[in-house]
Amino acid sequence: RKEVEQDPGPFNVPEGATVAFNCTYSNSASQSFFWYRQDCRKEPKLLMSVYSSGNEDGRFTAQLNRASQYISLLIRDSKLSDSATYLCVVSALNTNAGKSTFGDGTTLTVKP
Amino acid sequence: NAGVMQNPRHLVRRRGQEARLRCSPMKGHSHVYWYRQLPEEGLKFMVYLQKENIIDESGMPKERFSAEFPKEGPSILRIQQVVRGDSAAYFCASSPKGTIADSPLHFGNGTRLTVT
Image 1 (cartoon, chains in turn brown, green):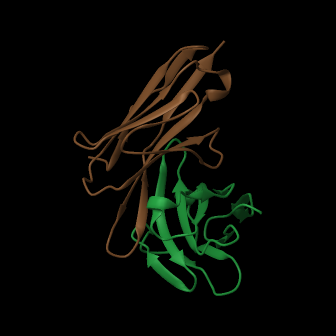
Image 2 (tube, chains in turn purple, brown):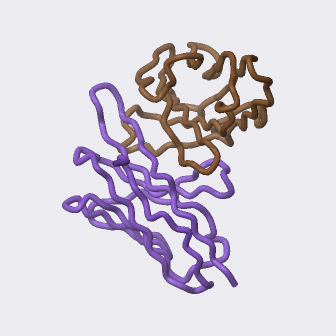
């Protein structure tokens, strides 16, 4: 089983739709959670951190469920420019340093 | 404030040659991470370095791959005797702290290595 697993996708949605991605993680010691966005296999860019209480940034809402060990990303009112691959990132401290584990990503295509 | 700088952007090597990938972290960042992304796959952690120290190399292949982050100059990821399976995008990231909890990663543009 992978340490971080994401919905396989791809998700194809019309403009204006609401879409949600889930990501499960296996390491219960995980401390930090992020969503990154990657366009056309360019460098990943931080979209948002995920906080225990859930957090919102404009049309994007991230939530964390520690009991079930998953995080989610909700995108409302999808735009064409939201088309990208969304990476779930989970970090835990080992004995020497922090190390991030990336999910394989979920591809979103927003169509006119 | 320049971001993470990687060079070259594209690198073509014949089988058996050496590949050297360079990464200069963001100003003020002393923690560097290398990731590899194979075609149609996700990012895989390779190695974590601080200045002059390798902190975690658990993701590095046992042979042919090495990394360094000298006191002066960029971090170098070196691949000796490249094979076709090494063809991938190699991303470098940096952070100001070693614990990622409070300092998300900042990525460079990546180096696309093609082995012919």
